[in-house]
Image 1 (tube, rainbow, N blue to C red):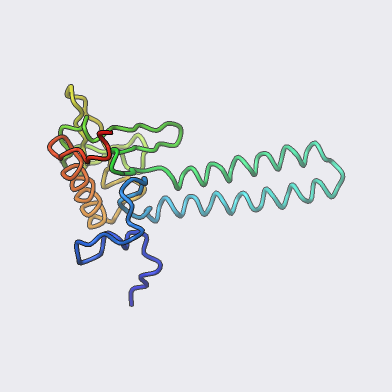
Image 2 (cartoon, rainbow, N blue to C red; image 1 turned 90 degrees about the horizontal axis):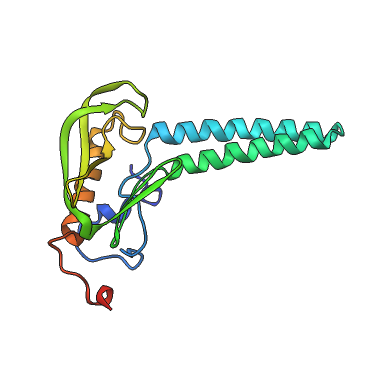
Length: 190
């Protein structure tokens, strides 16, 4: 029995073409749910942070306040890293597509995108240096520059081929709606 209140991509599962009241295309949204590898790694990092916080409380209770401060700082860094890990991925809006990395973001306006296509190519397995044959969603910018948006062996799509196909179709649909061939809305030209 599906639990619709737990589904992050419920707006994408709607059968009618009527936009829901909360379906605002100006806000950045992820066109897919984070994968179990990404969520599991973040959960383990938060579990580690809880142990570090417990150690910080024990150190503070023992009276070593400088050591407790350093330990609290380490716990805060682990928590920030876990939250950032959950934000990593592709985000879309009416304005363009954004690839959020752990350390840097890249945003490309839809008017600069020539094509978004799926290709068979060697891809990195879980972001590690090892490559395997897989599918990748490629974005081609004006000027011919290409970069990979999604792969089917990333932390979001490993062993979830249907989710990768659905996410790739969704990004391609956003490109078709707001890309180079799409008309510019009247509100955006002002």
